[in-house]
Length: 539
Image (cartoon, rainbow, N blue to C red; front, side, top):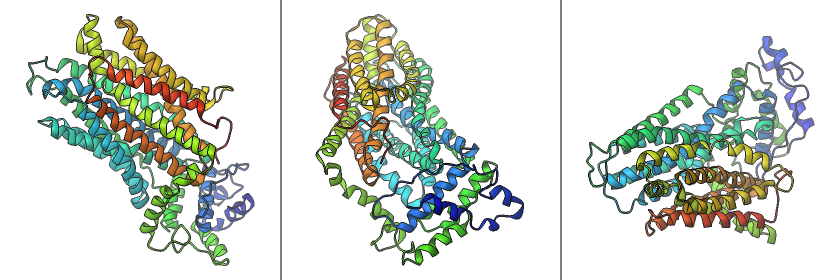
């Protein structure tokens, strides 16, 4: 890896290539670059090409010197759409379950969630690979457009089978949006501000709130009574999906207007150094500054390593043959061939096994509770004498409000002594299960609303702990494969939740009981993890 001295030497070269009127600004000592800018060490994967590593290190320093400006703050906003849409369309399945069951006389409504999770599982694998082949921005924009268009078409489906097909397409698109957004985010944000990725989870709660706010009045006012359903008097869910699809397409338009650039690191990996420099200069211009980085800097790296017999003319991974796209595919697949490293030592084997269980159990628990909650709320509402649909969806909207702030609170707790990441995960899992059980025992409308809001609040804790702990605990060499495996188990077990619900009584709370048990087990497993990552830098 390049040293700070080497970076400084390369940065000071080729300043004369910058237009004369901007040389003072572009100079390493000029006002556009922080004089005492800290150099953040770049994580290097063993066995990767040394020339590629040197260029990525230089790119990271250029981004750090540009700093956090207008472009990056816009990126923070539009990248959050990935988290927003993930929860938005997840909740959209729950919101339409009751009118779909009534309108199509469906006995196995769990198929809605099943097809959604099949799409999520496939999308989480497909889109990251496509982003390595065709660029991050391709998937960054395409997934939102596909989600919105599928939602619009789904609203007009005449039967349950055709609706499930478009629910699958929605899941396929949204399943890849969030991971691709994360990739583009960390590749365009300076290292000093990459922690902002954790705060993007606030968009998850906002997505819940907006979906609930749109669906509540439409479904309540335009849903048929049991046994008296026609196409015309059961339009609420269709109106909702037309609104959902339209909003998603609006967000995709906002992304295009925002003009988020392709990742310069992607261009370097494709041997397109000039395009990488163009992106850095464009970011600097958007931030009303000038970057010192020029194409000559990359040429100097090529010359220095050429003297040692090394180059980037071949594949990115040394010792591999073939064209660039083939190499990228091989590199992507190669990450998953190193799974044995995840079990190399006893502590690592215990960590990997427990994390797979945690991600799997929470993946199964979430749809069991969330996707069938409207039926249980409706059933409980009838028990307490409340009006059915109106209070069901009003309570759902109130619940969504409580899913916005806990991410920030969980982040604060995770840095407290004696709590840490493991403590937050334990509290989130166990408290989620406890509140779910309390939720099922009460006969008071006000009490079950309070318990439900508590569930919405504390479940965010365990998800925050999962998304923080997993990348922190694994070394850089296997971080991609490790987190991908955990995500796969989460989505795969999420598919099992609806399958289980096909054989459960969804009206009397059986899915809620099982969901609570799974959350408690996941919380206890967090305490059993061998490592605590609080206060430790990821390797």
